[in-house]
Image: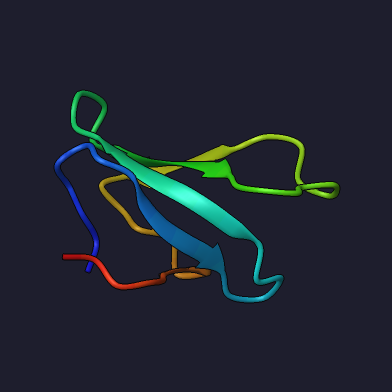
Length: 64
């Protein structure tokens, strides 16, 4: 489940399995991702295109 209310949700990169926290920015209508934990290879977060959840990311964990 992908939240679009502005709260963070856990997700990860499908290939590298690197953990991220994803947020939906409703003002700019796009997703923003920030690395989580020990990120020696990942230096900064990234932003997706307009209202599109990237195909190489997947939501993880249980969200209630």
